[in-house]
Amino acid sequence: MTLQGNQTNKEMSNQTYGELRNRYVARGVGNGNLNVAKHAEGATVTDIEGNEYIDFAAAIGTLNVGHSHPKIVEHIKEKVEDFIHPGFNVIMYESYLQLAEKLAHLTPGDFDKKVILLNSGAEAVENAVKIARKYTGRTGVVSFVRGFHGRTNLTMSMTSKVRPYKLGFGPFAPDVYQAPYPNFSEKPDKLSDEEYVDYTIQQLRDFFISAVDPETVACIVMEPVQGEGGFIIPDQKFVEAVREICNEHNIVFVADEIQSGFARTGKTFAMEHFDVAPDLMTVSKSLAAGFPLSGVVGRAEIMDSANPGELGGTYCGNPIACEAALKVIEIIEEENLNEKAEHIGAVIQDRLEALSQKVDFIGDIRRLGAMVAMEIVDPETGAPDKAKTAEIVKQANANGLLLLSAGLKGNVIRFLTPLVITDEELNKGLEILENVSTNV
Image 1 (cartoon, rainbow, N blue to C red):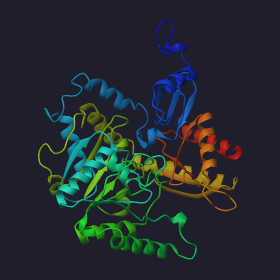
Image 2 (tube, one colour):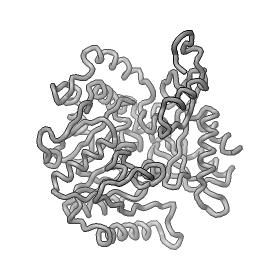
Image 3 (tube, rainbow, N blue to C red):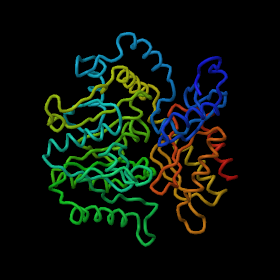
Image 4 (cartoon, helix red, strand yellow):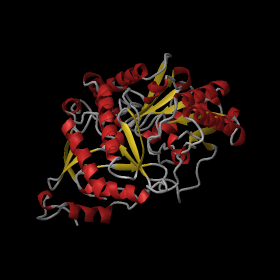
């Protein structure tokens, strides 16, 4: 099936495009919603048949400033006439340099920083590891259980979940280790919160005895809030312990802020909640409002460990993406999106807690800013209920709400609304969720 002959776009339906998808797109590409978008603005997407969807997924946390923000659209229309991509490795351009300066000042840490701009989150993580290895002369990489860092060979090796990310794709990169990471929803009843934090810190220190010698580790890569792992939020004391271990053994501390950055948690970066400055930080997703762009930001002496030509790539730091990112930073400030994130998160949390009084399968509800999650469990045993989670997500999509699941056990529903979402859009989306949940 093609669009040739008398067949026009107007005649194409979601079903016929679905047939094209099944025939020509690789099966391994997942789709949360099988309809075809035609227009999107703010937090609402309209498909080719005129159906509207409230977007609680935001391209997996990529659209904190929303779909097609008018300031970005207008700015990009102007800038694309200048040039599209001369290639920073060939000749420099202003937007890359201006964005590097912005990120160096915006990210946590009162020290001189430098920046490299790249394409994707996985590429940023790979380069952070390369830089840490070059700086330390070591090879070991430590990530955390439930962590997600990408789908390339190295980042897949660092990622915790086997299905669907790793099964059948080995062998994996060597010298990669996964350390324990606290999850309060799994805390033993006999332990207080403080006791549990101390226990997890001791587990982490024991890990560097039982699993890998810290003197061989180049970097520890940690999501300050685990994204695909189910929006797991650590205690500040645990984050401080990671920083202390890095200091004790001259390990580079890398904060993966790819999903949690740019106002998602009510601060520009989630690490600000813990009052800890990493040595390197990876950024992507909402950095450029949907344009492919990522970066590594960090201590100048660490970033400068690589020689000219050892880092880079053909499309890294595309100028149009950089222009979009500069506008994103302006919009976050002008529209007070950090404060908006806290408002959105509080509304969602209140509604989920009210919903938990109507249905018996909602477990832990947690959030940091607008990074909100709820667990779906068996009401009798408390065991994770992956099947019910999938059904809720499926029915939500069928009824006009773009929704995503997450979690190591597939039983977490996560909320990643654009931070420019209106109260009307937010309430409409939550009403769909409530109707689906009470009838599933």
